[in-house]
Length: 464
Image 1: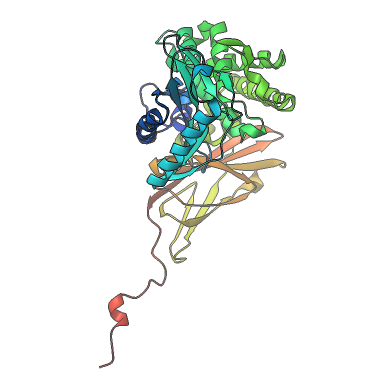
Image 2: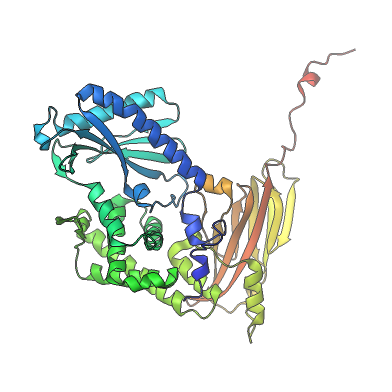
């Protein structure tokens, strides 16, 4: 077992800050997504049935169906749901009365009508090759692919933008995933998939820039676990390292990851050779980080190592634990002493100060953090800063943190109610030397303006 395992997953306390807790959508977000795809399906199916004369069905697919969805890792990124629409008739796709392009256009037309009738829709985007996309307020979109379904033969074919039918069966892949593992094994496999997807979302900003697809990562992780089912008896951090080593070996063997339900399809083929090389390089770095974390002799060092891969998504020990460990060693570790100042933007007279913690303060403050004892550290020491946000307000907008920068002094703002952290990490020659966690408590709205407007009645007062 590694020293950071309890920061990956806590099966006894779902509310505790763990990596799993920070990457999984909240219950409210799950419920909001469910309400929207149900509403959309209820709108589309009867209209498409009447328009085509065919029985229509819907089936939720993708990460939501697999139970491997992760929250957007950056503010402004969007949740993704895949809602398949199925036109049903017996026989092959070409036996139908409509071509694939026309059926896909029917879906697009009705998405546009749904947009006109619903204020919470942002837009229907330009057509995509294999689906249509509708974006909702709240950083959320639904991809809507459409298929021909021969129910008796249990066969599906995907309608594409270039007016072709593509052999594609999302249900078969989902059934394969379920059949690979026993019921009690699946939760851990799903967690491992989520860890891989969260890492990819952090290290590859967009699929267009070489980000490995969700299905590619899911299959690679599942294959790795299948190759060594014994790792399911390990803790999450140990199991993840084993999975990453297997994935890296496969990547080094060449750009081939076969679709397990269709060996004629190479899931890696949608990445260019250049992107595949970048993927291999970053995966190699991920393995090195995991190995360093597993070799760490203490909890703080292990967590800091994992944070190289998972950044602000990976939680660190509480400040009290960090300080206690630093002082308990035979040679106590020098910790950064952080002076913190906060000034309200709306009323500069509202000010706060603290050392190694601050608050409660109001929202919309300018915060300054400074290493007061920087001159006590050895020459060549660098200080880097990471914001880790907690609480419902930050979660609702998927703003769980960011790298703030490097230097002796750093500036941030207060935005969400809750207890947040500005973490200062000291390194020298690339090696961790110490960490200081600065607790920032925010518990109210912004301060009132310095010169608020006069009440309306004063404006109406006349001379006597």
